[in-house]
Length: 234
Ligand SMILES: *Cc1c(COP(=O)(O)O)cnc(C)c1O
Image 1: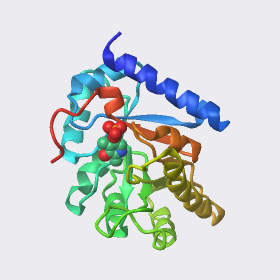
Image 2: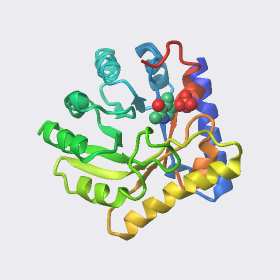
Image 3: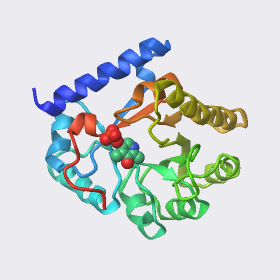
């Protein structure tokens, strides 16, 4: 078995165990393999081990990798854009990706909707919320969230699926759960206001257990699957 296949098996076990401890169905948590900075060959190894959904942070790198995997015969994968989005990159994202987790401004959402090609299903989106950070961190504030979510939900070529968050690393599990719990409460509030949300994108290699305890439905795991990233973020 390849290292990637073994790592994937281990992550699936961690997810299953965290679900069991939380009294949740393991099928209620999806695994997104974060392949940023990793070569197409590493993605192909994960595909061979049964993984179908991949997350990329850098738009051009993601677009190139999607094309590379397709050329390798892997056309049926699901690609999620999880990096910060600039307005001048929205067309590439709307044309190449299936999901975007990092919508935090209406302008970007409007461009994605307008640029989504007619032949493709609606782009699946999460609004990124900043529950713990300073002003220079990505994500909408909890106060601004309801208005943005309602506006995004009305855009014709987007389907709003839920919320995404990247809290600061917490000093302990209880703190991590509390922060993730704030995101879950915001998500439940939007659902109570009538939005049909089913996705709570939170939890990474180091904190997926706390995220699952607080209701995550999608964990984004990179280094625990693919190993340390070999070149730095640009
Ligand atoms: C890189 C990244 C991840 C994966 O982080 P790991 O700690 O390697 O699991 C998850 N989410 C986002 C938004 C990322 O940028």
